[in-house]
Amino acid sequence: FLARHCTFSFRRCIPIPKAHRSFRTFHKKPFGLPSLPSWKTSPPPKASSLRCGVSVRAMSDEQSKAQEAAALADSGAPTIFDKIIAKEIPADVVYEDDVCLAFRDISKLAPTHVLVIPKVRGNLTSLSKAEESDKDTLGHCLVVANKVAKQENLGEGYRVVVNVGPNGCQSVYHLHLHVIGGVQLTWPPGVP
Image 1: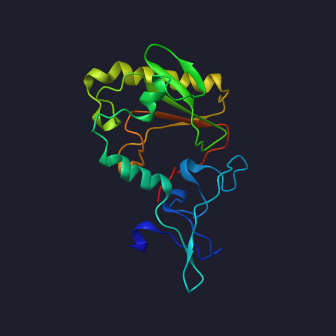
Image 2: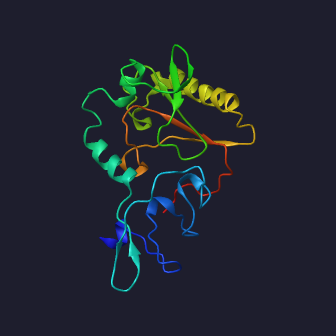
């Protein structure tokens, strides 16, 4: 169990979740963000200590959310994104047209973190469900991601991420693109 869900840091005796490290170093963050982001205000998840003085952290919150969401993926129930599109839930919208909506992520991973979603979910609960008939919508979402990046002054670079399925940490089953930037990103992104 520990080997699959936890990571040990012997150097500083701090817990490092698998989602926050790469195979090269224990000090990288998801999507290759710097190790000490001043813009990230949420506290780290709680860790439990073992007798040997090594700290352990269980599966990250995002991994847990993804596992739970996968069980409801094809239920047809409205997602939080459907409610944002219907204006039932407020969002900080940065771009909108007939096909897509782009808004700031409330759980941002970087100074700029915007989500681009198609307004009609249809079968696009995940990129894995995409079909030939979805080419126009998928292409349009990528064009909107680029427009948003320009609008947010990310000319020096940014990353577009699509999480797919529970192992990809997809926690909302409505296709969405993360536009992440405003900070130097590193490689590889979120590799255990």
